[in-house]
Length: 315
Image 1 (cartoon, rainbow, N blue to C red):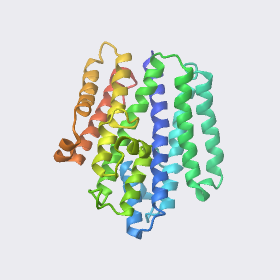
Image 2: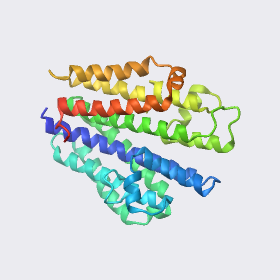
Image 3: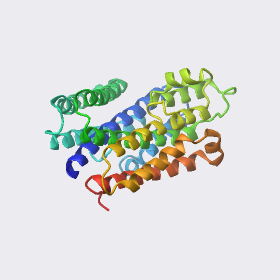
Image 4: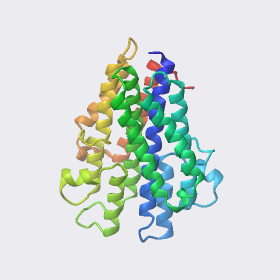
């Protein structure tokens, strides 16, 4: 496959996944902002959201105050924010259009229709009157895109590059959510967990579709340590770091070439650290340090994938 074609497929998937993750995080913040809390606590939640996406500086350059409606506008449709939902879905559609002949008709129509529907929804008052409905729509369109891709495309290199983009992006976002939300929580002990703490950790699990999964796996009170274990080390949790790295390693193997052996080894090492890791050891070492290192490794892995298969990223 031509590197430019692979590049468009890879980034189409990354932008779609990024839009979904942004919608997930915004939706959870909208829900938790309705809980009884001080103005400072509410501002801290929005500040953490900007921190997850590394957008605090860009936001501060444009806005003088930190309010929910301003953060939502900035992260959904601000033309100056290249990571906004509108920017991501537009970029996904443009990448899909560039490789229209590689995609099935169904996959292209999903991307194109998503972009067209987005214009109508953004130009309406939906974001002001019912932001959660808009975020659910973004998540639904992302799910639809993945399902149609799996259900209609030949299992060739095109699908493998799409899945590579999806799971690299998902691993990055899950790690950021764990890092920021874990250190924003107040209570470590499930026995002493207040009602507010319960809703806080429950909201975090819902941001990665993990609330029901947590109940099924642990059948007990919600504790931060178990949340970290579920979202990092459980290979059967679809959005966990280990599940993402399983997919990355598998799809790298399918598209391997003469220069990708080191990249495969690098990805294999990341997966092995998660596969054989224990949450007690990770917490003893320091969760923040572990996740910071993981994020740096994911960034490096993305660069290696670009170098070996795609159009190299600009220095």
